[in-house]
Length: 330
Image 1: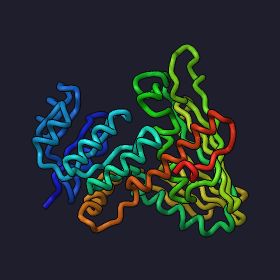
Image 2: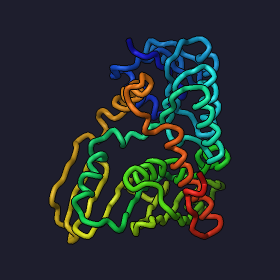
Image 3: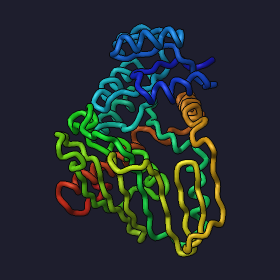
Image 4: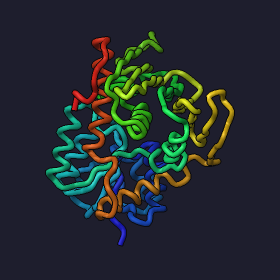
């Protein structure tokens, strides 16, 4: 029998990824949707033939849900998670886990006490291009430097709730940067030191305080070090990680991964014409297995405390202009 699932928040991510993912899922079925915009709810509840709500509290009371996918503005996420925990509903949460380190610690405690599973959506972990990275990295000798970048162009970084730290928790670091931070932690672990500089100067004619661009340096006591450039104002859209070792390099980008010589010659390459054909469905089905006790929750609250400590270290470093050890933020 499939798990009964609801979706809170009917933005682009829900409509393009999660709802199609649910409709293709072997483990869960969509039975209810919720959004504060009644017109959007009305349109999609008839289209999808499910129950529609404008208040998630009412949906949790009325529906016998096993799980809920939460895709709401960052500052609303906490209340939805807390309410789901009260109803013993498992949560698949769009990144970030929380808007601050303290909030993350409180939510982790509440999830544990209520006995619910919470998993943060980190789709790249379900894409074979990204899962191939460590296998190729084993073939390049001793790695010593990482060069990573995730940038895209948004004309007005001040627009909407994402331009306000009070609502978003920050800018490009905690929002889009969460995915690349996850890659760094997944592949290399939590760094021993972080140094960050941030900018809110891309549009001096607008008022906003959530960083549009960040340059982050990070290092490990093992000798590995690297840099991460994040921006919501630098086009064209670019996502890549390059790991340099003593006997070659691994170059990862959306849809393609290559092992190359230190001189730049390609040794082997893996690519997919469609970068994300099944990631959403795979993620949902994996979460269903987590709920059923068949798989470990590799992206649960405790695991994402590391992500939040990295992010907190970045913001603390940007304020103090000194290296911060993210492990001390835990």
